[in-house]
Image (tube, rainbow, N blue to C red; front, side):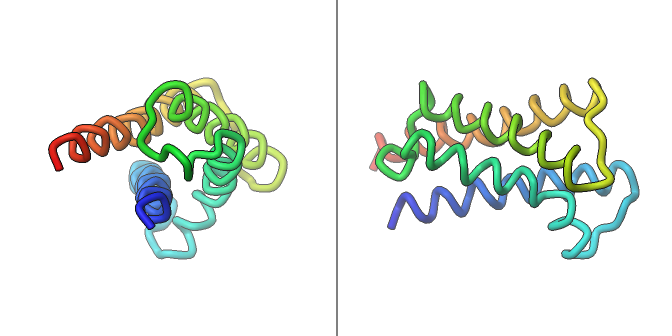
Length: 118
């Protein structure tokens, strides 16, 4: 159950990344607009969890968390370029990587800290 909640929290963070990007670029804040931006990265997140079997260690920062981040960004960018009107300019790659790293890796650090205190 904990792993499911933590996967859901990762997905919410990816949606927050998309919402923030849409707001910054004034491309629409309706749920459909946010999901349209987020779906490539949500698929990447799912692939990252599968590759690392993160449901067995959903709080692990290294190596699982870093691999989840890498797969989320890489797959998200590839899917974005292939199947949406979005591009993958160098500045977008940097911002996407930095933002998702902050969100996904800090979530793992906080979860580890909170579980250690429980």
